[in-house]
Image (cartoon, rainbow, N blue to C red; front, side):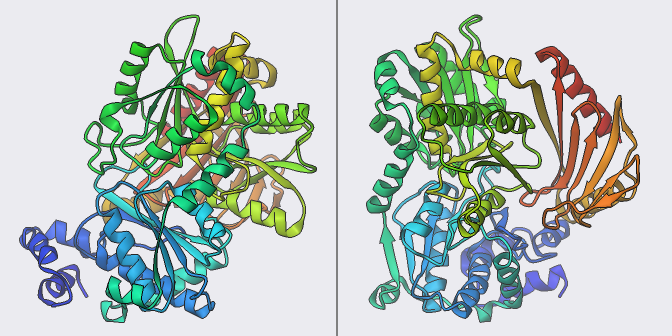
Length: 572
């Protein structure tokens, strides 16, 4: 059917509620808006759904959530997983509780048990809960750090990680089979409870999760010693991190924790900022103001579902607060864990760290220094979570730490997704550790640069919305694939990795080999002078993303090289 025909169906069919029809009636004369809402079904990708909240087949609403859930339910039934059930969590976004409820009741109508958190929880706690409760799958309703008009729906499998092959493709196929809403089942909550299918969870899982977080701490003695002399400013950005982050800091002994009042309460409207992303400087305006008032050592911000952590720290020499990238904070935690565990003789046998292909190359230098295995995976923390399972199944390595450049990391194996709660906890411990030595986090970072090299990375994302935008992104990727550059500014392109076609080509010899990773629409350029560039379309947003990294001889040299490389990439 055409977009207009689908629009008319939604307006006429008794299946759709009055509020939906009232919303759609307001756009009856707007052909462009009708096309955008109905030109396709909201895509259920390999991670789940994400889109703008609203009425229409290309929007997040109770109907598209039910439809996707029915496909998941069909797969779970085929796997005989009804009795194991599904854990469900949600964050502070608009419609998150409602979408979580609709997902639960659709699963219940298919005879599948559900365990729904009583109120909002961080995404990593959902990852933990799947394994803790012995579920076959998990769902978390969140759009992570997207603007307020978005929401989403991520699916996890029984290992606690987001779905990966073969389950992602199989679930995708089942969702695709649900082509009409009359195929979708639902049930009243009271009936689901009477049938023993609908369960509410809360404090028991919280307590178990909190215990696992605290196990990752190494020097609780230093925390207690520095508790009165170390000041933290924290903002949950109106998301789900508020309670767990404050609780773990309190239980570890940190005493001086100040929370940004305007961004404390859960609120999907995000009233102080339109884009609740800890990667953006504007997210810290209120936190920086508070930090100066209380003379904070460190500023921490978590995104709405509390899986990403942003950081500023005070430079004691200048008195100014310095922004840290996810690579920087991740490397500080990584080296601290390796060094202190090694000194304590608590580093496991065959230790490994895992990073994505767009994460800093400093990780390779650190892994080499500590004689630790380093495993690279495709972009997306689900591939890091997958490696934890593979390590355990194959008895190869012991996972110590995993990170991606986009402000996400994980220490330990209690969860299989990035966890800002454990990142906050450990980074505060790292900062307290260095403060005892008279150093700031920035001093520690400079020391790492001096030891391992001045690595610096950046990213540029170009947003291209709608049907035309999606087509343009596809065209840009295809052009880059067919016409790889030989030079990017002063950097020579030494080799091209085309992950979609599983080919690495050495441009000087013409030799080809496998990339060694699953197929994905990603291009990676290996450059001269330890530099690199990676291009891929976002899997969750209407964007094409460019990543780049360099290694300089000083802070200024690395900044200059990165800026020159960025200019060359965007000029292509």
